[in-house]
Image (spheres, one colour):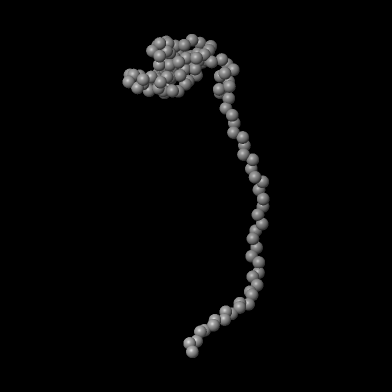
Length: 119
């Protein structure tokens, strides 16, 4: 069994082309079940199958898709997803409760107001 990378290249066709930016259907047989995959313009899919199906050959002859055979090591490297590093939590510091201190009243200074008198 081989693994194939199938890429829809209809987005690269001329804008007056009938198949410009079209979604392509690829039909194949998997375990005695007929399956179909839709491939959007510019997207790629990986298909592991013994031989390429006839629908893929038709689309490749019409120059609507590209097909590349992918090795096992390349496929494993593409599937490997880097896990995000765990964010180190800041150590939690216990906050001391705020205690209301006894308020000491200070004597207020009286403001002296000078009154101007007209003489």
